[in-house]
Picture 1 (cartoon, rainbow, N blue to C red):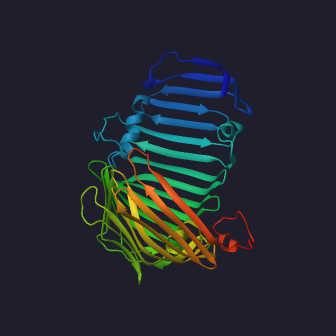
Picture 2 (tube, rainbow, N blue to C red):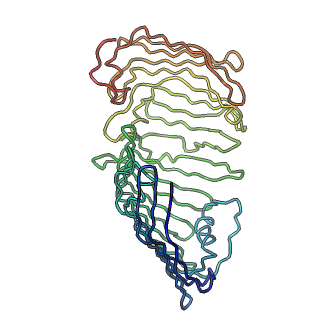
Length: 418
C-alpha cells in the first residue's frame, strides 16, 4: 500500500490540555494492489476557549466532534474510569483522578472507496453513527447504530447498542435485527442486556425468529474471580431453548480460566432429555464429563438458524475431557440416532474413542442405516509440544449420495446412486 499527500499544520502552542490549531492534508492518494483512491482534504481543527475544548476531524468517510470541558491528556483515564469501577478491565484497580469533565462525542462513518481499499469484500455499508456524553458528576451514556453492513458472506442489520451508568451499575443493551454468516449462521431479533457491577455481569439474552417469537432465552451471571478466573451460572427461571422451557439446577456453576476448568451441578433437562456437565472434584485439572441422555440436537442447532433445521437426531452417551489445563484430550462413546442435516437423514452415527494405552487413543466412528455403511478406524498418538499424529483408515462400504445433500451445505443437489 502506498500513500501520498500534502500536509499543512499550524499550532501556535502545543499544549494538549488547551489545544488550538489546525491540520490540513490535501491531494491525498491511496494506492493498493488494484485500486487508486483519491481523497479530498482531511481536516483536524482544535479550539480551546473559555475552558472549553473543541476537537473536530473531517474526512470523506469519517467525521468526529468532541466538544465540552475535558483535557486531552486525561481522556484515556476518563474512558478507563467509565468501566473499571463496574468491571475491572485492568489488573490495576486504582481509579485515576481527573479534573471535572463534561463533554459530548458525535461520530459518523460513511461508505467510501477508501474503506473498500482496506475491506475489499465490503459490498454495502450504511452510515454508522455514535453519540455519547460523559460527565464527571452525572456519569455517561452512549449510543451506537449500525443500520446495514455486508462484508463477504457476513451481514449485520439494524444493530443498536446503548450503554449508560445507572447508580452503582453500568447497563449495556444490544439489539440486532439480523446477524448472518453464509448459510451456517443466522440470528434474528437478538437482544442482549448486560448489567456490570462489582466485577459481575448479570446478563439476559433473547433470540427470536422471523415472526418475532421468542426462540431462545438465557439469563445468568458471569463473575470475575481472583487470578483471572471466571464463574458462569444460568438462572433456572425463564430458560427457553428452541421455543420450549427447560430446567437447570439452581446451584449450577462452570468455572474457567488459565489454570482452571471445572463444573458442578450443570444438568440441563426437559422430561427425559438431559445435558449434564460435571467434574468429580474441584481441583484445577480435574476431568470433566459431558453426558447426553435422549438429547435432541435441534435444541442446540436451532440456535444458529432461525427458521430451518440445521441438524437433528437423538444423542446419547458421554464425553470425558482430561488434562484440560496441561494437554487437553478426550475419550467418548456417543451415539446419534437418525442424524439429519438440513432435513436429509444420514443414519445412525456412533463414535468411540478410548484410551486404554497411555497417550494412544483408539478411534472407531461408524455410520449405519439409510443404506449407509461407513467406518473410520485407527489411532491418535498424543505427544507433547504439538507433535501429535494420527493413523486412520476410512472404509466406505456403502454411501447413499442423496443422504449427503444436507451435509454438503448446498454443494450438490439431487444426488443419486451410492
